[in-house]
Length: 411
Image 1: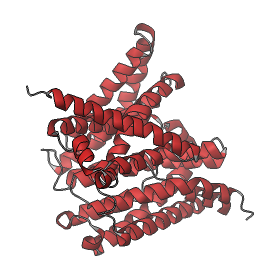
Image 2: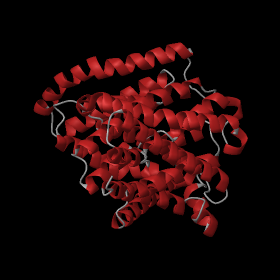
Image 3: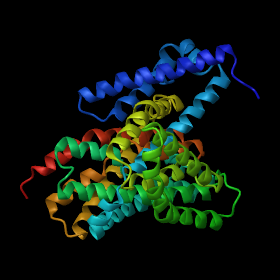
């Protein structure tokens, strides 16, 4: 079996050290300005990527990220693991009981907040594929992807913003969280099916087999799987070393689920997300255990992924003002009005509907994951991916002030 040589090991360790140091420095800087850590981590990636470091110090950038193919392959492995674990903890945040308690209102808001961006995004991308930068050979799939990409809400980011505003436990805050959870589940189911339909889908199964297995996997994991977890977790907590036993087995079932969905032609992240939902909804997974998992992944693996975004593309060379403008305007307006209309449809007052609209317009994590997968699959161009990243940055920065402003309206 081929292994890394002496210099490649050094190079990989330097890459990981650079990513983690820059991630921590810029996450702390973002926190100083009351912004989500993901904003600082993405900016850090742009700085050490081809955009800035590659322009100012090209030889050093090449030495660090371009001179050793095997260490770059190993780093890509770390990034793949990071995105799987990121979706795993995103699933842990989905509390099915919160969704059930909010009932039809949350479902109406979630569906409306997705339908308008998906339709508008599909129409724009399908009508102007070459301008927007979607794959002309996978036109329908790529156009559907773009609509879905601008319909996703960043659950982790909006939860943090609501906590900062003191709205997390209010009726409006819980409604936003429940709707965002539904958007997450629906979005990843739809995206996983879309990816399997594209020319770059990796599964050897037929389309309907893949869709059937995906729906069956989701249903089984959230019913039978959740029941098995509830039976096994008390034994793990009692018999195995804590928290080591829980951590190792949680990650093991995460990787098993991820490998299964990758095998059937659905991206590995979907399996990780669904098993995260099943595990996170268990009454035997304590808040302390969740916090340990969050701290472990959010401070080590998640930053590696978000910094890797800046390593993928040159944000200056591939920047297209027209594409960015379309993505930002269409993304912000359709998501806001979709959620606002959903709020009014659910019988929510106008003021609360405005807050819901701004809350569900928050991006910054899952939509970027989705965009990077589509970029790697060849569904979108570098310029369109940059537009999605900028949309995520703008919305995550603006959502807090906008919700705070809307909460003070006298209407």
